Length: 246
Image 1 (cartoon, rainbow, N blue to C red):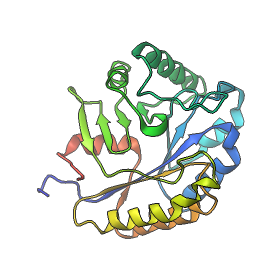
Image 2 (image 1 turned 45 degrees about the vertical axis):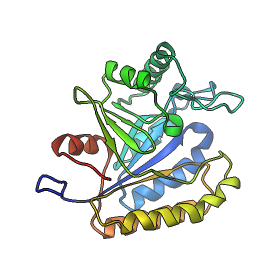
Image 3 (image 1 turned 90 degrees about the vertical axis):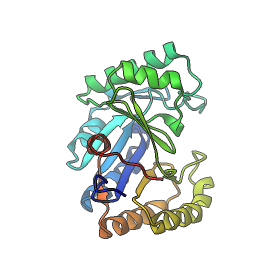
Image 4 (image 1 turned 120 degrees about the vertical axis):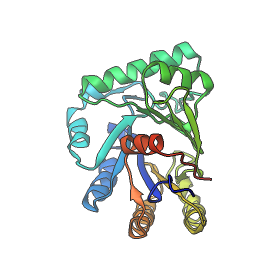
C-alpha cells in the first residue's frame, strides 16, 4: 500500500432487519454492542411486512435513537411482504424503487431520523436503483462485495471482501449451519496479508449462538488495531484516500 493508504484496517458492524417485530432480539444485540463500546450501524425497516409503520412504535424508535455509538440507516421499505417474499431492489423498476425509497425516507424523517446510507435487503441493487440513490442524495450504498460511494460524481464502486452473514434463510434453526462457515471465512479474511475491511452483518434471525461468536470476532479485530467505524465515517475515509481492499 502507498503512503496515502488508510492508517488502519477497518471493521464495519451492522445489525440488519431492525423492526418492532424483532425488538427483543434487536435490543439484545444493540445493548451488547453499546456495553462493549462497539460502534455499530443499524439497518432500520420503516414499514416491515406492510404492517409495522415506525410511527406507531415510538418506544422502539426512541430506544434505537438513545444509543451513543450507533448510526441508523435505511434498510428498504417493507423488507418483505405479508407472505414472506423479500424485497429485491435488483428487480424493481426505477419508478417503484424511487417511490419506495422516498416513502422509507419520509417515515424515518417523521420519527426524527435522517440518513444518506442505503443498505438494501439481500444486498441487491440494480444500476437503476443506484441512479435513484444518486438522485435522492445518498452518500453510500452497500452490496455483498461492493460499496458505492455516491457522494462523488461519477460515483465510485469499491470492491470489498464478501460480508460475513449468518442469516440465509430467515429461520434461526436452519441458519445454524452458518456458524462454522462464517467462522472459517473470518479466519481467512483476518489472516490475509493486505489492508483489510471486514464487515460483520448481524440479524435478529441469526442462530442463537451467533451473537457470542460475533462479539468475539469484533473484540479480536479491535484488539488487533482495526478501526471500528460507522458508515458516516466510512464515507469520509473512502473519499480521502485511494483505497482498495482486494
